[in-house]
Image (cartoon, rainbow, N blue to C red; front, top):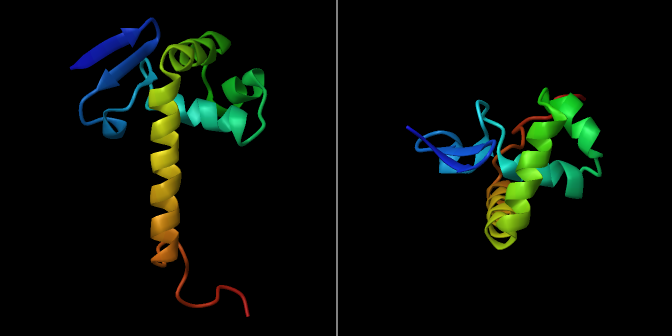
Length: 99
């Protein structure tokens, strides 16, 4: 069952780790914030790339504005987890792909 967090943003247990998502999609608010902050994408580019409306992107940023500390902490956890897994060798091929 989906929980409406704010207009256009929902959380569904078991979907995307229960993280806040754009309603009707699996696109997390963190995905949108990361695209703007680290991917240096404009909001209309995010809309085009993710196949969502500008209004949905705006809803994600409205949620982010009200929940900045929570979303920033979640982004940092994702980055820390990626770094930990990369150091353990995950995501790297064992053999050279090209000679």
